[in-house]
Length: 387
Image (cartoon, rainbow, N blue to C red; front, side):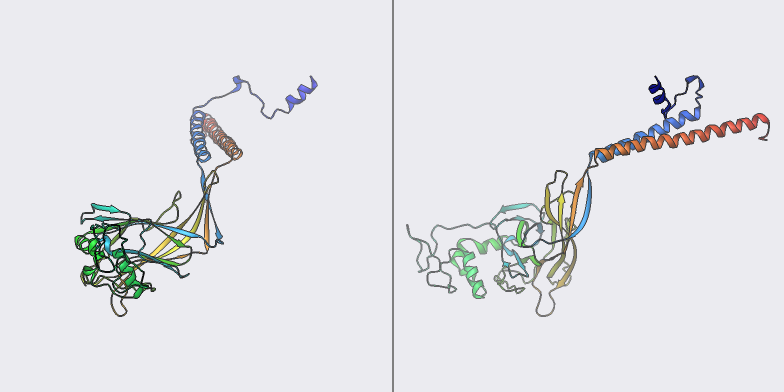
């Protein structure tokens, strides 16, 4: 019995007989308000516990030798698909011209409706009997070997398509201005295709794979020579002297998508001013920030964010800038790490206890102040001292 009496003496919550309770209207109102406050804060804590929060930190990017996918979806309302080439180059010396793989071109009319969509260029009709290198037509069971029209690098080189003839001329540094006389081009309907596409636009989407070093990728009308920033058009006899490089960037991203990513160029549109009749080079200067996003399960997404400034350079003076839309990018040495984190159960329970205890304590102080203040006022009124 003595042990139970000692434990009873340690009770920090002594009980009061209900006959001694005095319930008031103000106490009831304070109880309702405090209960609502507890409920709201409890729901807020539940939401924070169930949904993860994202923490960020900055570190130095020490990655080396990586490659990057640049994803794009760009519409040129006034440039035919046959004239638009996608090129890349970087400071390491890697260059790729007229990229076709992993890129889809869609012919569109002046209203933006899709006319045709193909992966490897648009349209290439064939005829049955191509012209052989020796001058005759292809016979049955004979291996086809087309002429390169003087641009052969060796006697056994064959140019079996208009594109191969154009590439042979490009490697020689020659301008191909008589495409209507080239059998391969006539056979593929290249000249007719360009004429048919006059007045059309082009939507280009896909991706290019580049080194993770500073460089640029661009959309240039016509074909380019393998010389840095020296682009010559090889179809001047049927192309306009100026190009309308108006464009709309439907989508542009560097790397994979991740939650919360914001691409500042998505939906950006630029319309060329026709008042001076000059084309030019529209330049986007992009600062790419490497980013790692780690979700709540520990899965990492290696991607990038970027900021951008833009500038239009008119084709004035000499040398004239090559027309087109150019994206010059460079990488920040700082990497951003985003990490999804959930509140721990212990932290959640601690916050719930703090909410309940804190509100009841504050509510008790307010109730005591109101109760004793009301009693003091009533006592003064009873004694006639209030007036």
